[in-house]
Length: 533
Ligand code: GLC
Ligand code: CA
Image (cartoon, rainbow, N blue to C red):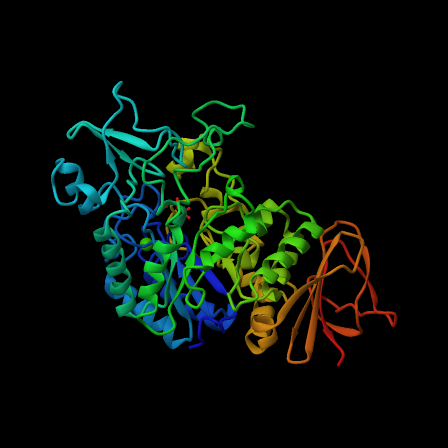
């Protein structure tokens, strides 16, 4: 198996939606095992990350865990997991799983004990506080999923803290026993052979210890129940964040070649964005990295992408691995947020950047957000926020073929199959030389064979008139240029040196540079040029 530094990409699987093998409408671990051949031989990806499959009331679809060291029966058994791990490993695929250290489910044995009485040994594993004199919440913190961060518990007369839903009480990271318990969860899975963890919502594991009120956001005019009403200065991203992450990276270092990727959204109210990512590398950049999320937060603008990616890569010149994620189970699908054509451009971009690109399942075929009716919506998290459609649209079942349930299973799935399954599916794209799947397959193979793509330097180039994001990759005397037309009109660009177009998003015939090194990129066309040496 390749080391984490050598992998070509990380592919995220949302287990509920990949493949259902036991006819209950929900994807399962044996379903993923069945698709290992697809992952290794067809797509050709070196690592997968599985969203949570642990026992859970599924209020937040597995991000509310009631037992960290087991498998929810809806997904299978521990043996099924072991089997998946072995199959993946014997096909050269690393397996990363989700770790949710900020909170448990309210159904976790720890929380049940904790809420049982004021003086039980687990009381201090969660954050309990007395009401204010008037009976109200201990402070003004708001929950990311809507409403206050505090829920009153009748039995013991105190409030408990939850950064997310009331069913997801926050663990008390000021308590060393909690940290040790989470470290032991990591060891449990590492001992089984798991290669790493994607670590959920780490902004919550350090908070202001005095639980001071968040200050009001002076620019915000909405109501006090809206998340934007406050500057989230005290409720998250506290001073001990990095120190606590280090307690996780320390565990990774007890083993060989294990890696952690942190889910961290910098907050512009806390200062500049890029240094906040850099700070997270401070845990231990040899075994960890944060996802870089600006790729889906930035407005669609070539120069903005150019300067942001340039600054980011320049900032990381100490050997840190950048991890570029432009979609996941919490974000609209790339092909919907942008368009099918732009999705091709993003594929070329992601797979020619340095570091580890994250590919969310289904994005390799250009899956689009589902159009769900009100009674088809499942995501309670977003329902609380009053969102329309929440995160369900980007979680619809994987489209393997054009059969009734798109090859996901034999019965009606938990979320409806997208209506475009006839055209957007793996089977069809496999036979279409120009499909998005084939772009991924070709670029992943290219990336695997080519050390430059993984280790080469990165430099943004200004080759057009502001509508083109272009960059140079260089390694051991070889150079490649990527030029991406962000506009829907043709763009004329002049490359810095002569070369040959080796990949393009509008394949059919690969375009060529003219003798003066110029080329006209078609609308949303991207090219990869190998410099003539
Ligand atoms: C992360 C997950 C998201 C989940 C939340 C609470 O942001 O990606 O899906 O709802 O944390 O665990
Ligand atoms: Ca199933």
